[in-house]
Image (cartoon, rainbow, N blue to C red; front, side):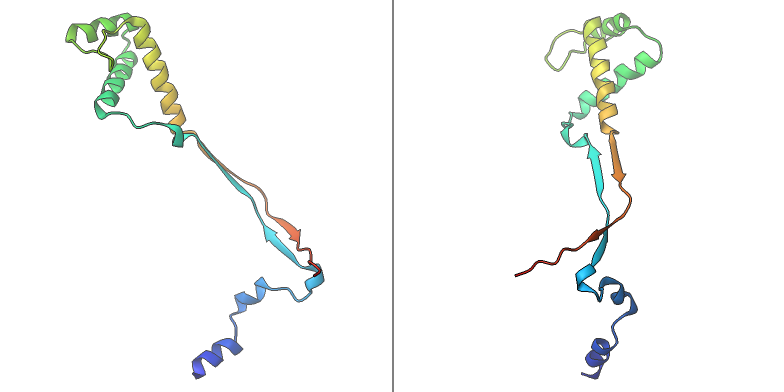
Length: 125
């Protein structure tokens, strides 16, 4: 029981920072933070599809053209997710979409505005 009275009579020093004595001219320090992301709109892909897309990107980085890549995929018997053969234009658009997806996955940033003082308006009843 004496411990509780001791705490209530001796508040922590940091608690004094939260209160102001002049209620008429009270101010608070506030800040605003915005977080922007596009990762929430990215659907989950099948692991086999991701593997095929990474292979397609790897072949392009090694210098194969879209025509060579489509010919190589068709020779191996690989089909698109819609069970169709690959064409050079399909390889190109697939690479483009994969690149844009990777950009979207990393498109997250935050903005923290400088702190501001706000006056608390007293509400009359």
